Amino acid sequence: MNSPAALIAGCDEVGRGTWAGPVVTCALILDPARVPAGLADSKALSPRRREALDLAIRASCLDLAIGLAEAAEVDRLNILQATLLAMRRAVEGLRLRPSLVLVDGDRAPSLDLPVRTVVGGDASEPVISAASIVAKVWRDAHMGRLAQTHPGYGFEQHFGYGTAQHLRALQLLGPCAEHRQSFAPVRRVLLERALAPGVVS
Image (cartoon, rainbow, N blue to C red):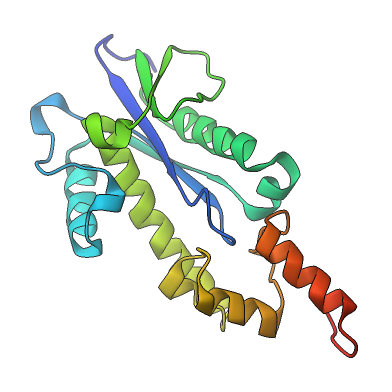
Protein backbone atom coordinates (compact mmCIF):
# COMPACT_ATOMS: atom_id res chain seq x y z
CA MET A 1 0.00 0.00 0.00
CA ASN A 2 1.18 3.52 -0.74
CA SER A 3 1.93 5.97 2.06
CA PRO A 4 2.62 9.71 2.37
CA ALA A 5 5.87 10.85 0.81
CA ALA A 6 7.36 11.97 4.12
CA LEU A 7 7.72 8.47 5.58
CA ILE A 8 11.37 7.64 6.31
CA ALA A 9 12.47 4.18 7.40
CA GLY A 10 15.58 3.31 9.35
CA CYS A 11 17.40 -0.01 9.08
CA ASP A 12 20.19 -1.55 11.13
CA GLU A 13 21.66 -4.96 11.95
CA VAL A 14 22.98 -6.85 14.96
CA GLY A 15 24.92 -10.07 15.22
CA ARG A 16 27.23 -9.50 12.30
CA GLY A 17 30.35 -10.53 14.22
CA THR A 18 28.95 -13.45 16.22
CA TRP A 19 30.09 -17.04 15.85
CA ALA A 20 26.55 -18.39 16.09
CA GLY A 21 22.97 -17.42 15.38
CA PRO A 22 21.45 -15.29 12.65
CA VAL A 23 22.20 -11.78 11.52
CA VAL A 24 19.10 -9.87 12.63
CA THR A 25 17.94 -6.63 11.06
CA CYS A 26 15.10 -4.27 11.81
CA ALA A 27 13.42 -1.76 9.53
CA LEU A 28 10.96 0.67 11.03
CA ILE A 29 9.19 3.96 10.51
CA LEU A 30 8.87 6.27 13.49
CA ASP A 31 5.85 8.45 14.09
CA PRO A 32 7.40 11.95 13.97
CA ALA A 33 4.95 13.10 16.63
CA ARG A 34 5.87 10.30 19.05
CA VAL A 35 9.62 9.71 18.89
CA PRO A 36 10.70 8.11 22.20
CA ALA A 37 13.23 10.08 24.21
CA GLY A 38 16.69 8.67 24.81
CA LEU A 39 17.28 6.89 21.50
CA ALA A 40 20.94 5.97 21.00
CA ASP A 41 23.15 3.29 19.53
CA SER A 42 21.96 0.04 21.13
CA LYS A 43 25.55 -0.85 22.10
CA ALA A 44 25.70 2.25 24.30
CA LEU A 45 22.62 1.28 26.33
CA SER A 46 22.18 -1.11 29.22
CA PRO A 47 20.00 -4.19 28.63
CA ARG A 48 17.28 -2.78 30.90
CA ARG A 49 17.28 0.55 29.04
CA ARG A 50 17.19 -1.20 25.66
CA GLU A 51 14.19 -3.28 26.72
CA ALA A 52 12.31 -0.21 27.96
CA LEU A 53 13.03 1.65 24.74
CA ASP A 54 12.06 -1.39 22.67
CA LEU A 55 8.59 -1.30 24.24
CA ALA A 56 8.31 2.46 23.69
CA ILE A 57 9.42 2.18 20.06
CA ARG A 58 6.99 -0.64 19.31
CA ALA A 59 4.15 1.28 20.92
CA SER A 60 4.77 4.47 18.96
CA CYS A 61 6.20 3.53 15.55
CA LEU A 62 4.07 3.46 12.42
CA ASP A 63 5.51 0.23 11.05
CA LEU A 64 8.19 -2.31 11.93
CA ALA A 65 9.60 -5.52 10.47
CA ILE A 66 12.39 -7.94 11.38
CA GLY A 67 14.62 -9.63 8.80
CA LEU A 68 16.97 -12.58 9.33
CA ALA A 69 19.83 -14.29 7.58
CA GLU A 70 20.49 -17.64 9.23
CA ALA A 71 23.93 -19.08 9.98
CA ALA A 72 23.76 -21.36 6.93
CA GLU A 73 23.07 -18.34 4.72
CA VAL A 74 26.05 -16.51 6.25
CA ASP A 75 28.22 -19.51 5.37
CA ARG A 76 26.86 -19.71 1.83
CA LEU A 77 26.84 -15.99 0.94
CA ASN A 78 29.50 -14.42 3.25
CA ILE A 79 28.66 -12.11 6.13
CA LEU A 80 28.32 -8.89 4.10
CA GLN A 81 25.92 -10.35 1.55
CA ALA A 82 23.93 -12.13 4.26
CA THR A 83 23.60 -8.84 6.15
CA LEU A 84 22.38 -7.02 3.06
CA LEU A 85 19.91 -9.86 2.41
CA ALA A 86 18.55 -9.60 5.95
CA MET A 87 18.19 -5.83 5.55
CA ARG A 88 16.28 -6.29 2.31
CA ARG A 89 13.98 -8.81 3.97
CA ALA A 90 13.27 -6.37 6.80
CA VAL A 91 12.49 -3.44 4.50
CA GLU A 92 10.34 -5.60 2.24
CA GLY A 93 8.46 -6.77 5.31
CA LEU A 94 7.15 -3.27 6.03
CA ARG A 95 3.44 -2.75 5.32
CA LEU A 96 3.98 0.94 4.57
CA ARG A 97 6.18 2.03 1.67
CA PRO A 98 8.72 4.62 2.80
CA SER A 99 9.95 7.38 0.52
CA LEU A 100 13.51 6.87 1.80
CA VAL A 101 15.39 4.20 3.74
CA LEU A 102 18.30 5.26 5.95
CA VAL A 103 20.75 2.39 6.45
CA ASP A 104 23.51 2.31 9.03
CA GLY A 105 26.99 1.88 7.54
CA ASP A 106 28.42 2.37 4.07
CA ARG A 107 26.73 -0.48 2.17
CA ALA A 108 23.07 -0.60 1.21
CA PRO A 109 20.83 -3.51 0.23
CA SER A 110 19.36 -3.63 -3.25
CA LEU A 111 15.86 -2.15 -2.99
CA ASP A 112 13.27 -0.73 -5.37
CA LEU A 113 13.11 2.54 -3.43
CA PRO A 114 15.59 5.29 -2.49
CA VAL A 115 18.26 4.32 0.03
CA ARG A 116 20.88 6.44 1.79
CA THR A 117 23.71 5.01 3.86
CA VAL A 118 24.78 6.80 7.04
CA VAL A 119 28.09 5.89 8.64
CA GLY A 120 27.55 5.97 12.40
CA GLY A 121 23.83 6.35 11.80
CA ASP A 122 22.91 4.24 14.80
CA ALA A 123 24.21 7.08 16.97
CA SER A 124 23.18 10.08 14.84
CA GLU A 125 19.83 9.22 13.23
CA PRO A 126 16.97 8.49 15.68
CA VAL A 127 15.16 6.21 13.24
CA ILE A 128 18.31 4.08 12.80
CA SER A 129 18.95 4.11 16.55
CA ALA A 130 15.43 2.82 17.09
CA ALA A 131 16.00 0.03 14.55
CA SER A 132 19.27 -0.96 16.22
CA ILE A 133 17.57 -1.20 19.62
CA VAL A 134 14.67 -3.33 18.39
CA ALA A 135 17.01 -5.62 16.45
CA LYS A 136 19.29 -6.08 19.48
CA VAL A 137 16.45 -6.86 21.89
CA TRP A 138 14.86 -9.27 19.40
CA ARG A 139 18.13 -11.08 18.74
CA ASP A 140 19.06 -11.41 22.42
CA ALA A 141 15.65 -12.99 23.12
CA HIS A 142 16.06 -15.27 20.09
CA MET A 143 19.47 -16.45 21.31
CA GLY A 144 17.88 -17.19 24.68
CA ARG A 145 15.40 -19.46 22.89
CA LEU A 146 18.22 -21.13 20.96
CA ALA A 147 19.95 -21.82 24.28
CA GLN A 148 17.05 -24.10 25.17
CA THR A 149 17.27 -26.11 21.96
CA HIS A 150 21.09 -26.13 21.95
CA PRO A 151 22.03 -26.33 25.66
CA GLY A 152 25.58 -26.10 26.93
CA TYR A 153 26.89 -23.34 24.70
CA GLY A 154 25.79 -20.40 26.87
CA PHE A 155 23.89 -18.63 24.08
CA GLU A 156 21.72 -16.94 26.71
CA GLN A 157 24.84 -15.31 28.20
CA HIS A 158 27.13 -14.37 25.31
CA PHE A 159 24.43 -14.37 22.57
CA GLY A 160 26.75 -16.15 20.16
CA TYR A 161 29.65 -13.71 20.39
CA GLY A 162 33.21 -14.93 20.71
CA THR A 163 34.05 -15.37 24.40
CA ALA A 164 36.29 -17.72 26.37
CA GLN A 165 33.15 -19.49 27.63
CA HIS A 166 31.87 -19.94 24.09
CA LEU A 167 35.21 -21.28 22.86
CA ARG A 168 35.39 -23.83 25.71
CA ALA A 169 31.87 -25.03 24.88
CA LEU A 170 32.74 -25.28 21.19
CA GLN A 171 35.82 -27.36 21.96
CA LEU A 172 33.87 -29.64 24.30
CA LEU A 173 30.66 -30.07 22.33
CA GLY A 174 31.64 -29.23 18.78
CA PRO A 175 29.65 -26.77 16.66
CA CYS A 176 25.86 -27.03 16.44
CA ALA A 177 23.58 -26.12 13.54
CA GLU A 178 23.54 -22.47 14.66
CA HIS A 179 27.29 -22.02 14.33
CA ARG A 180 28.80 -20.22 11.34
CA GLN A 181 31.25 -22.75 9.98
CA SER A 182 32.86 -20.18 7.69
CA PHE A 183 34.05 -18.14 10.69
CA ALA A 184 37.67 -18.91 11.58
CA PRO A 185 37.22 -19.90 15.28
CA VAL A 186 34.43 -22.36 14.42
CA ARG A 187 36.28 -23.70 11.39
CA ARG A 188 39.38 -24.21 13.55
CA VAL A 189 37.45 -26.24 16.13
CA LEU A 190 35.91 -28.36 13.36
CA LEU A 191 39.39 -29.09 12.00
CA GLU A 192 40.81 -29.86 15.45
CA ARG A 193 37.97 -32.29 16.16
CA ALA A 194 38.35 -33.95 12.76
CA LEU A 195 42.06 -34.53 13.40
CA ALA A 196 41.78 -35.57 17.04
CA PRO A 197 41.78 -39.36 17.53
CA GLY A 198 38.64 -40.77 19.07
CA VAL A 199 36.58 -37.59 18.67
CA VAL A 200 33.27 -37.98 16.87
CA SER A 201 32.23 -34.74 15.14
